[in-house]
Image 1 (cartoon, rainbow, N blue to C red):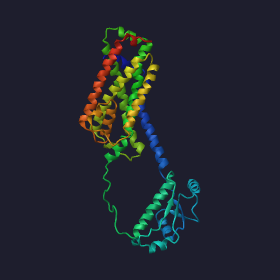
Image 2: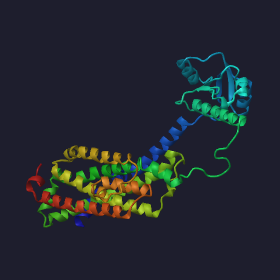
Image 3: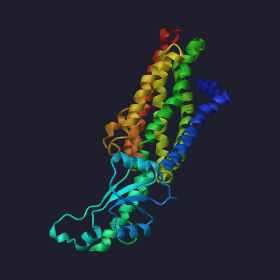
Image 4: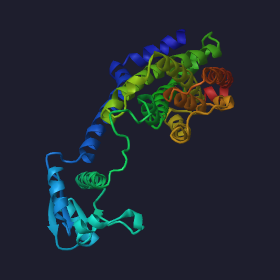
Length: 386
């Protein structure tokens, strides 16, 4: 506890640096996702103040009247331009889609009989899916034509009435989105928040020569290792809590209300806290061992770069797959077990036994790492290397 208090006092002595390390990750992700949500919604949303304009080749009078009442302006076109010319005109904005109707369209549909097996009159609509206004013009005109087709020979209805036909609920939508981004972000923020602090905790003291003084005191070296890991873990958990709050607070802004993250309750957040806390212990242990091998903070940071890449790859694995693994042995793999637990928690498909296996396994790995770190502290060659 003396070593832990010393490390915490050194970290919090610089209040500005401590505030940046703990609060900045959450504020940064919240601000970034809020900006991204506004930017993406602005880029992908059509201009609702403008009526879609569609250039029609052989446009029949019936469709022109239908389109006018449905909010689409039809503009007569002599012939279908080339694809390049269509793209240019859509970009210029005078028209947003091109529709080609068969000559004598009204007469053809009046005499058409599906029982003959002859192909029905074909309407072709060309648009630019990368342009929100063009895509909206296509969707609006296609919906009007579908409605017009049904009115000609309406033999049955599909999903008529006010019933709810989509069986997916808000939890399904939230889970499928959250698992693609949150486990990766949590791992990255947890690792980066611990990396500089843990590297400074051992390699920094070796570089300044204060480690030799500490080792000369009548303190067991196991206690030194435990104290440093405890202090760095507490700081890392504070930063992880800030990151988690920022992530979930910013998700609503990122999706502009399309995903309801309020579906998660106290049970999910408590389980997430358990997984994050045990994962922080493993990450701090790994970083501290690497830091003990280095002679300086700069060297420790260099050694930690490959480990950070591994952490990122493990987080990316959570973005693929059909859900959390059911076999318990997956939850014995360090870091990967944490990702699987997060997937299970966010999709409401977790098994309490697997979460318990993950937490216990992480504690066992942390204990083994502390034993290794104690052996490293007992090595005069490692501790006094300058």
